[in-house]
Image (cartoon, rainbow, N blue to C red):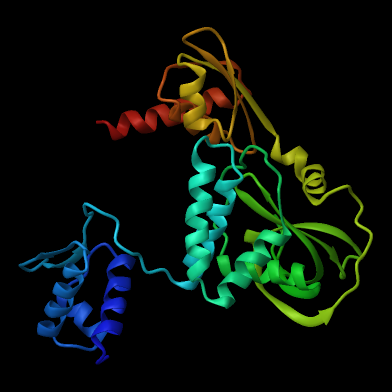
Length: 321
């Protein structure tokens, strides 16, 4: 890699990808000598990137926090994920975030290559935000999977994928995708399952290797007013399995800033509030109450909640020695 400018961008990307690199590893990745690597590191420092260097057996290089935010290098999936996150924040309930998110999103989209703008636009166009409390324990979703499905929704193209339903083996499915629904912290695909001859809801994190088939389909009559309502109805019994009511010894505004996006918070006097949490996993309710940073009393616990609180309390007590 002979071009210093290209090499500098590659070096920056590597430093952002891992907390610490040895000099030999970095030089090997860049295909240069250790001496040339030192000059490249110095070039980054001149551009405002705070690169720390340490000597010795465990020595090497690390990108450190700086006094100002320098430009960042993002790969394709990271850029798409950032844009989608900013879109969600722009439409979200967090005070003061919407205007800032829109400004940052405008800057990001302006410099995006056309192929990435297409992926971001496809996600925006076919995503229905359900605006509900989060489902806990959600598995991570591959951005490439998400954008593949979004493009198929937008282009009305049939897709094929492997799907692993609970307690079942993976099965091949061919689907006419309709909409993506962001419900809490999970993503769902609503589509017409050609193998089952009916409309189905698929969790995106359970899709394996989705791919377009090249076959375009005509619109079908959707059996609900909107996709978000359809998903809520299909998964509602499992999604709202637990309901937790608690009184927190802190003002409502404080608690809303901490967990207001995922719980219903109602003022209850000058120094307290009531919290209503719904979810499919009690660990999330325990974590949310802990995030309030204040004492709390559970008012209407599910029978299993007391045991979960004891388990978590013992775990923290053991960690504290």
